[in-house]
Length: 437
Image (tube, rainbow, N blue to C red):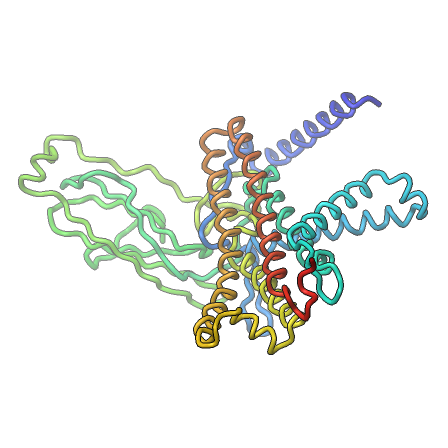
């Protein structure tokens, strides 16, 4: 079969799958299934969203979408490794050596690329008479493969548009936003909207100058208030929710508004123009799984998947493992006392007490350097892609996806190369075996 025929078959399969998903969506959601063609990428928040919550031995365990994405990425890598291993076991040693093909070629190319990368970064460094690049390959190579795969994994279509309704989360914070814009005159409608973070099914009570307000829907997140005088308005909202009889909240937020009066009201045209009307809004109630549909409303739907390295905790974890390995190999190369002397460098004796703490802080700061660089680039890249996709989809963002794919590769490269360089510097000169000539 020719290549163009295979491509046509693959395209036909994609069309059938997309059509099938659309029909299922229409059967489940009715006319709302048309939103599949208006899907928007979720703009990531600063904190990853919780998608699962468990109570284990009285301990509240929350699973974030970044942790879940990391697990999915690791499972995919393990599955690929298992499939490659099974394929290799089916071949004889002679066939594997003389006629490599398929997954074997991909695996050998990937491993060879990473080993050459590490050996180039480590130079002629040796530890215990063994090449340093190959010694650290299991750790640094694993970090490189995971980082680049997790980075590229986040570029897969629909990665940020598959949304789920989060588990029950208590109210922990509440914010107020003013929907109507411009100056406030007597007679205008003032519309406010409250959000309760990721809290599930929050309820709200509204107060204006201490008096509870009746809202359009009971315990609504929206307040429409008709300004009737020039007195200062203090608007307060209480957010709470409950589960199994336990009450969470209330968490309170408030804001102050002052209608225009006197010359300011006259200059703004108060009394001469038509009073502003109520802002359009509606309450949203979603099912448990909202597939393909865009959205970014706290407490309703959150992305099931999110780039793992856009979470500082994950990049910091990898950085800690890398720097602890650096220190451990430094101790192996120099011995405990020798490594302490190594940290003080070859400075004159009177400067060693000064240089030692400086170098200790320098070693620890590498954790921040490695983790913050990777996190910042991934988080910033995710925000950029989401904004560009939502504004210019579908054709223009393809260019940015390609650029980000290259930048994500560079970040994986930097993390791995810097870790290798740090290890090489730590073991240099250890018992005459750290750096070859």
